[in-house]
Amino acid sequence: AVSLIFLAIFVAPTTGNASPHPATASSRLIAPRLGFYRSPDGFRLHSGDSGWLQTAPPRGNQTILTVYRSPRNESKASLTVRVDRLSRGTSIDRYVGRWIKEYPRFGFDVLGSQPFSQGGVRGHVIDLMNRDSKMQLRQVVFVSEARKRAAILTCRDNSTDFSSTLRACNSIVKTFEW
Image 1 (cartoon, rainbow, N blue to C red):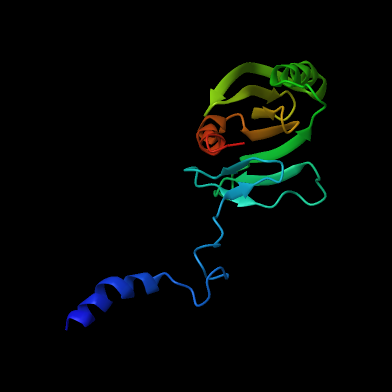
Image 2 (image 1 turned 135 degrees about the vertical axis):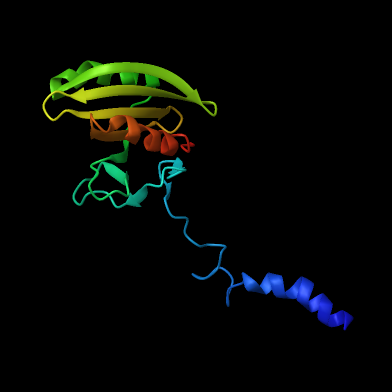
């Protein structure tokens, strides 16, 4: 009777989550985490508490690495992730300063720009409005001078829906780590 109790308490619970063969597709050890993105450029992020779905980048687009989309079918909201390779010595201030000067040429009004720190990593937020389409954007830029990379997370939606979209985007951005 004691051995049956031992089996019921200690052995049965451990076999309930086991796979037939460790480190195979059915194993928890390597099971994929939905919404989790790990970049070969040295950063990672995930969908956080946003409820958004991670999707493949658009075909033929070599610059966008991954996309997160609102689960609402009628929504145009998305967050794209891309990486720029930098020359040596490019700081976040220099990188962002150059782009802020360029946005008006591409039809964007800069609504605001502000540096911030997240988990010891410096970032910069740039809020934009497209003059023609009335799409509102928020770009969050993280630069790793050691890796010579800039990670750019761009949240976009119609200006009328942007404030609710921003909550979901911020939830994803908060998970960013180099």
